[in-house]
Image (tube, rainbow over all chains, first blue to last red; front, top):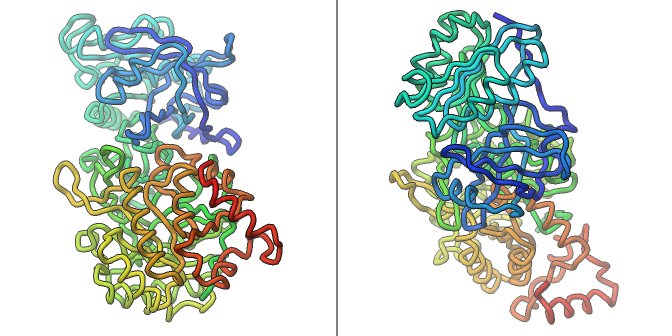
Length: 279
Length: 317
């Protein structure tokens, strides 16, 4: 199993709370992709981290969003792209934001993915819009000369995120959809075992539904593979204040710890999460 | 009566400031009055998820007093908060009067704390397994026990429910039992969509909390009152201060905007916040000087009354 180094945020790289501006908004299948200019966040971002946005004061819960891509330069300086599924009050509100809209954004939040010390093959498993969390990781791994294999999955073609982009970043890409509209028929959970065997990767990174991540972690453990999962939980504050997004994990002493997905996560070692107790 | 020694009329409310570390990127903790999450004798892992659910103009919470226990807290979070310069008010809740005594004895030997807040306002005391302090005499009993175990000069805040019909009665009882100030209030008893007991907090509470503050201030002019419930702007804080509160606590707003406290502290800095209307002008002058020694203008400065009158004439910002 490779030595995986936690990439802790340095004190001067902590989150900022700033007003962001929507520079562009575009449809990507069933999703909206917003390009945001938010001073301080792109510069601090590391793969696996996310941002949270505040709606109006009648809707207090903040909405966490995966960062799909960070552009280092542009007319407005560094920008970031977030993926929004137009579901629920917040998703619909965000999806309807016009170009030029301004909104409070906090980030980057959370602990990023731990990266391998050496150039080892890596498997990246992304499901639905959560796959957004893996694209900048793929870039970072490629920069570290880690051969990247990607498995991208969705219920149908409309919910498949950036399969073309995946092909640009990875040596090998497997696409699966539940309805078989594109790629192989199936789910990330049904294909991850074969993908692990084919890639020979000693480390797998995954982002998607908790039930999928549980399967990825289990399949990885069965093969002695290290897993890093980006876990989504309801995160009303997303900054670690409210202790609402707790995840039961196995502590070093064998006891159960409750860690916050927004602060100690969202990237967690898959073999430490007590999936059956997640609720 | 002991002074609270607050450097600002804005405090971080219990349960919404995390361990302090999470708030630090957004707020300078140096000199900030920070009430910790409520601590119990032993660690508690809290309730099941979902613990916090959005509600119209509020949050429903069923966090279940998730905390590491007093001993671990003192070794970790408290140490860090004190080093960061925060004025730490430790919030406690016990399952019995004996547990209150035990917690207070321990805190009495703990250096660096600015005061103790006794959480007598848990929305669902039975479910949370804490001492049920809904009856005024029970709330007073808890305060008596805590007061007895702590140094006389250490402020004790009694955090009360916003059950308006008993607020004055309870405030009087805890004050007579030795509370330095009453905090009004906490999340209102409510229910999660799935039927679990919960507390409702946020903007929906603001008018309820303000009414509560007004009632207690009018009925008990000698009692120091701290307003809490839905405060998210400088105007909201001023509403409480004009009503006669000596300070406000900010909680749920931090979950929406983590910079709220720093913004309010900055906005209220330098302005005389102790603005009293005719209803409370007969309150104990000495007491208020004591509470605000650290930031009030010189009481002998003739400009002080002028400033206050100016604020009364044009209360809006």
